[in-house]
Length: 101
Image (spheres, rainbow, N blue to C red):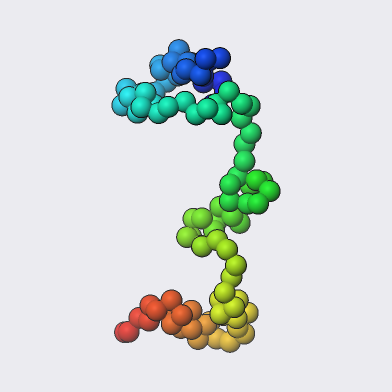
């Protein structure tokens, strides 16, 4: 962001107006330059506590895993050492999504 604004905090259109579609530029016009835009950019992965990217955290987002502590029932299902069909049935029961066929 720092490279896209001038020292007065205004967008530097000359840097990107030729690269984007007109509709996108119209949207950018409506975006106010953040006050912190004059600070140096620091890449950070917001889905980990330390800001470092992990493939597993991206996978969690992709499959829709909720963040926070894992409830004991889900941990018990994961370590359940029985037939996978039974394990799947228990998982679906806990989700409230039993399939009747």
